[in-house]
Length: 382
Image (cartoon, rainbow, N blue to C red; front, side, top):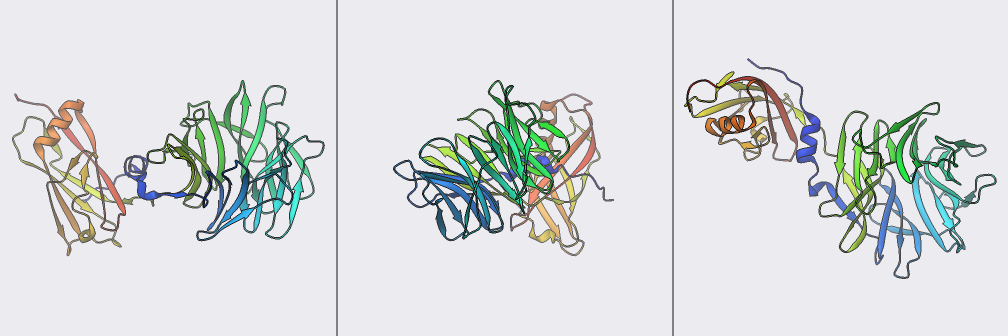
């Protein structure tokens, strides 16, 4: 008899999702450092530093790199992109940036009224967000709207990105930045993993938010879907900052011993939810049996014969000792050594109703997983 259980998707993503295969390094040719900030489809923007330390914006389409320099500026940084429109900021020798909007042909300066400096960070249609003089702003092409969570005298507010009516950014008090979500009417402070006060929200797409937490130079990236948090650490990096998101692609930059590099990270596809039945339903930690048998049913569009026989694990720890696929009945039978499971449960002290997760991969790398609950007892002498 099959049993349907809720898949622990977050557990699967955290344990097997962040493999190196999901990460791609992006280095502007011959640059000393590359900062990747925004993405829209196959277009990516950011800026790089040449060997002299001068900063130039760039547009990358997956094949070709194009330098973006605001006419006459001493430095240019691109932050956000939507279609053919790119926003960012530029400077004329002094550290007082001016915002810009570039449509592929024309450069327009964006300076908030009366501001000493302006930086445009995100764009959605005709809406542009960013910050000026310690305040956040929303600009619709004609009207500037100041957005403040705290007053500049007590700290500051910056808006990093926009998607529809939702905006993300951060506010600063006592030199500590904390994340913000704004829906056009109300503010919601957001702390990475619910507890990290040092949090910056930098990108939003639908219900998915990216950013980074922890002080530089040891910051860690994250993905937040409104419920679950996933840490994003480029393999081998000392620092990872997620900056932008579009669909299943996240961009940002990381630091290692060789400098600072851009990256693009592909969010793993959600695991297939499998039905799982574990036999026996009651397990005595002192029994002398040899095997625990797990029966696995995949959704009908998948074939159990495509399961990678080396990938099936119980509770992410114990690998299957033997696997057999009944292609006619579309049932996968996996056997685990009972002694290994008994030892694991005895060490963890799990007695009573115990949830047993089963995970694996298809030959093409697609994840699957399911869960069954068994009764664990400890009777007799070992």
